[in-house]
Amino acid sequence: MSDTLQLILEKLDAIEKRQEAIQLEQKVLYRQIEALFSLYQKFEFEAPLLNMRSWVASPDLLAVLSGLIQEYEPLTIFEAGGGVSTIISAYSLKSLGSGHVYAVEHQEEFAKNIQHQLRLHDLAAYATVIHAPLVPVEIGGKTWQWYDMSKLADVDDIDLMLVDGPPQYDNPSDMARYPAMPLMEKKLNPKALIVADDADRDEDKKMCLRWEEEFPLKLLRYYEKSWADIEKGARLYRYEPK
Ligand SMILES: C[S@@+](CC[C@H](N)C(=O)[O-])C[C@H]1O[C@@H](n2cnc3c(N)ncnc32)[C@H](O)[C@@H]1O
Image (cartoon, rainbow, N blue to C red; front, top):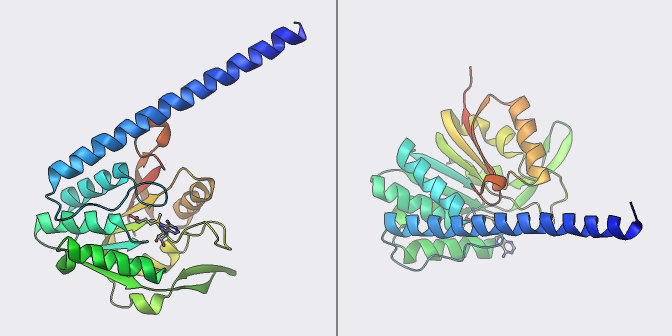
């Protein structure tokens, strides 16, 4: 094969791959629109929702979260990393008429903003934001950064845990969210649901596999980006201690 032909074939291959990636992006974006419509159909929001791009939980995750809350009726929800997810969890609990979401947030400004949002949405009775700075903690001979556990003393009997923080960005530990299981396990009720967001990222994939080896977790579902399920990927587990 001539060099020119080889070059053309390589270019064609690259174009095909790019086209597949664009098609997936379109599906993923369309999924966000569907998910947003489903949220707006389900709830009568008292104020505009926060933006749902970039760092923030995506509409697809939020639609799954609200579906899980309506199906399983958890009384206590814990969120590692608060935000618009806290608002949606609180609306879901309000529609059930019971339950409470505790969202821990390490950035004070973010914590204040979520509290403000909860007031705007008239959801203060269903949600508490806990500002807890990240502090070093030793697990298995390694140091991690995790929310100051002394601020979480009142959080117990968790029926649903959303692990969406702390951010990996700027975090000295790989698998930044790994401590959620070793540190929060004692606060989980048997059969608690655990949602790990961002599960398609390399760090989080590694973390999920390590959790699956070390803790009694049954994988109920893997929402994959490649299926346009959840754009950042998410794994849903049930905690099943012996
Ligand atoms: C994945 S986000 C949390 C998502 C949260 N569950 C929600 O629904 O938005 C994880 C953390 O990133 C941080 N964060 C969110 N937006 C940010 C931004 N624009 N810049 C820097 N940090 C941000 C917050 O501290 C948050 O707890």
